[in-house]
Length: 281
Image (tube, rainbow, N blue to C red):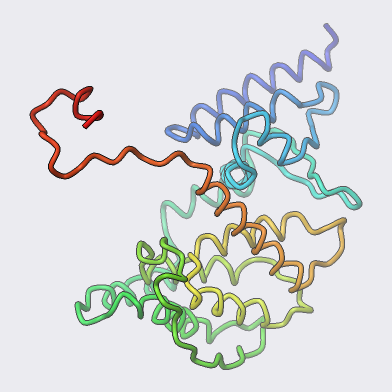
């Protein structure tokens, strides 16, 4: 065995050890990392297998693979490089990186401004007079109020107040999303490297999507994937981003439809019966 291949296998063993140590309880990310590891080139230690190929190998949807890759990047376990002219990224295994150290530092001390924002919104959440229909509007307004000190952008344009859609047209996840979660998602979104040509358009549209009832973490996750994979190396446009979000929603809907329905047990079922007989009632 050549020296180059020996070094590769030693590095891969160290990478596997780091995966197991840092991904405790996250079987999904570990599964995706192992699938990527099977395609690593022993000469370069890299691979450019696409998201869809990984999804097919793991038996997962593309959205789940994208989430797992982002977690591996945050932990410093995977280095991703964008290649101009190719839609798939180049992946390289690593056991340390700025992303992993930053995440570790964040667990020790959180930025004070985010902490203050979350604390202020907790008081809103404790108000029993707040209607669940007002949750997202309050979250967007509170997050916008905390963005007054953005030096890198001009002041955001005022957003016309629009009534929230009826519950039948809203994402069911909206009722499980607190003002604090929405505000934290806002902070993460506005820190992303949006193209300067967009101005404040993307922030304005984020508010619109939020008021339409889409979950904040869905918007942030889609934006992160979109910015990490600009089409063919071009500067992404606002229209491209909106089309990407629509595809994300369609895939999420298709995944939900594909799930088998849970067996429904009548409320009058005799609970004293064994489980086998109870399921057949």
